[in-house]
Image 1 (cartoon, helix red, strand yellow):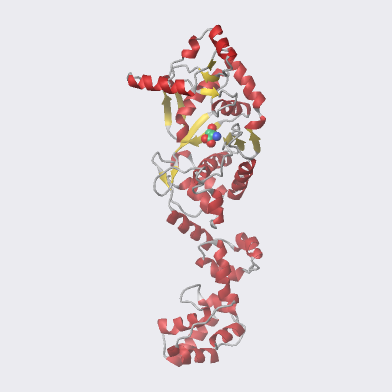
Image 2 (tube, protein in one colour):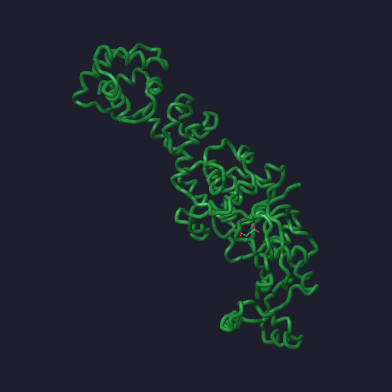
Length: 442
Ligand code: GLU
């Protein structure tokens, strides 16, 4: 059974680029009848905040993503400690006592001698006495994972076969001096423990994956299948940052964008598919496939998002809008079907509804006064339907000799107080005879 996970650290709210990772996982799970797990990478106690975790859960729910399970790394330290002990026992995790300054000096020396600034593994040569001396002085070790030095090859569902040359990397620090875990080891331990079958994440993690494959194998497991997707950048081509809050889902929601517009933008930008309305995440899952993701950058466009959002609203069936309209006391199918084509954001409906329900300020130019008076006198008797507008204007055309714009625009201005807007044949019925007469007689 397919099992995927989205693993944010709750150190800020997630952005559109994170939503790309969320959806790549969610749509893949959906298409394969799999499970989606939300895992909070909250081993960094200083920077992780429960309110961010709650916020991220809210963001996912808003998008329509429902995790089968939520786990927090801060509650799973026993597992990491056991893996730590296992790696120490087999000699793959070793203590190092260099301070940050010492490491800096080592790196500068290596560079000066034209060598890559890779950790020299001096700690591996330390005797027990030397270690005890450090401990006696109160120095605490950080712990490094001993890389194999052989190229790691794995297949990637998006990028094809990948080779990570771990020989050109420093042995990664898995545990800090204060005993806290960096992301690398807990992630592997959880992926094994939770039975994750696919790791789907941004391409900034490719070399991490090489290191993690070694850790999976050292712990007696097998690495899941990988898929590294291209990253979404902002309009200027710069990376998105959780810290700066750029394009956070929260801010996009507050700006009034539809969750489907955000989902489509997040996952379809930078693929071979066009950015266009899709009815639901289920439908999106049918279109989504790793083969559509391109290797080039995926650049966000605000204009594209706005157009997409409007197109989604213009097609939105009443059944989908109803509950939200009820909150504005505007749950009326004819009203929705007449006005939706004018919306950029859903809440615009409140302003457009004034065209039907008032109040509006009619505009009647001096040179149109007589014509509007004639129009008021010839307003058809009720009941009204979609044909009323046609009958009325046909009559006015023959009575006044006006046609085209000079016939229709004065009526629109008097009835709605503006020169653009929805089709008058539908709007007229919504306004009703009494109110029409009042507007024409201002
Ligand atoms: N917490 C990591 C991140 O946000 C998770 C990466 C992963 O998916 O393993 O980058």
